Image 1: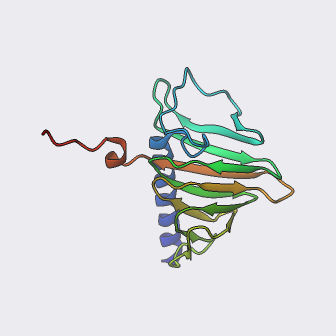
Image 2: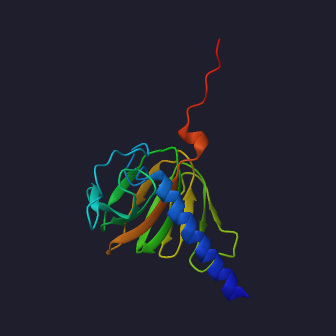
Length: 175
């Protein structure tokens, strides 16, 4: 029974990851772009640099559309990267290595192998580390910093979604 539950959670996580980033594009990865990134053709094979020492690789991409897409971000050792606020939710999953984060919003971390636990709450402005198998969801308009303090590259899969309410400007009442 537990094995089936764990497989189901992994399957749901994989689907959520694919859908979330597929709908949000590279806003998290783009270091402050708004989530609408103009692209011509397919992204280059093997990824592209989005900041010195940070590369993004499109794992799912539909030519002619900015979304859906799923990206792997790789951070070289010693790299610090500013995460600019964007109107999207981002699921951030540690694939290899570790990153230290400081965000301007609270998050809940699920540690590798602990999907059945309620998660670890982290207050805004508090540094935390995500390693391989750990994940969290960045809320809308979160900003902060990611830093690779390790000696090896760190790779993370990021899936984002722009909720319809965040993507559509609020209507202004007629006067």
